[in-house]
Length: 300
Ligand code: GDP
Image (cartoon, rainbow, N blue to C red; front, side, top):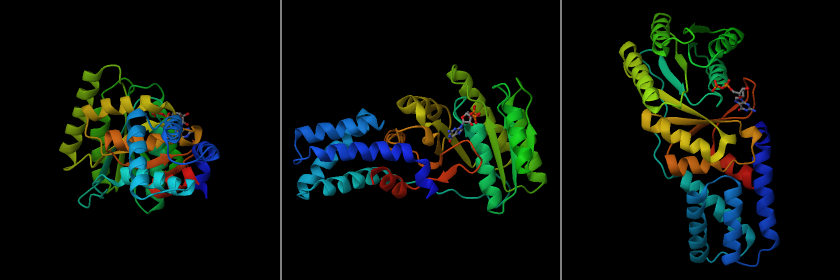
């Protein structure tokens, strides 16, 4: 299955490491728990979350008198699954009164523009109309890059002016979307992290102008994170969370990393759901995130 194939790197290395653990397994003792900790850290789960997982595996193993390595692996998967599922997510809902507005935020290079194109393809395939707002007025070439995608996908792209105010492009795009009964309007925004106060001001303004044009908008704010940046990505994410009302994460470039554990860390530390994962550079390389396929894929 392509879902798992894209994850090959994460999958192979994690399961390889788990198998390596199995070789020296003689029961759940200090040594084993230490080794398990290392495997989790190598998968980029991060020290805090990894410690929580190891503690919980130990507790459950005692309580349930787990003996075999397979039982422990199963228990590990369950612990991570519970950790992921132990949060209430607001379900995504389509705005029935007008366009559903999704803002894409994240630092430059995380994959915002590419992911915007991938989402467009998905929404189109489900029979929706889509319009794009190229509001990344900061990164040189971002606007043209999105316009090229838009043309390829056959949707309208409202272009901002390079160096201009991203909110202006969003307002134009909202009006276009309303007038043309567009189902989804996706706004590709700029991701300057260097200046937190500026970022905050810019994002606040985007929220304000969009909600003035379309009540309830933005309906979703998706933070695009590059999985290959590992724990750094989490610190970046924290800055965005402090500055704007992020409703979900899209984790890109999972095809290029053996560190898939970042999903669990994101969930544990940020509490946000991973909505989609990116598994390549093409418009089809996006999957809806599913924790069970993910974990069993990783550990099989
Ligand atoms: P932006 O600055 O956030 O808009 O980032 P871009 O969309 O331009 O993406 C930066 C680079 O990452 C581009 O070369 C993309 O093709 C690449 N990219 C984006 N998503 C993925 C992914 O899921 N997998 C891989 N391998 N590359 C990706």
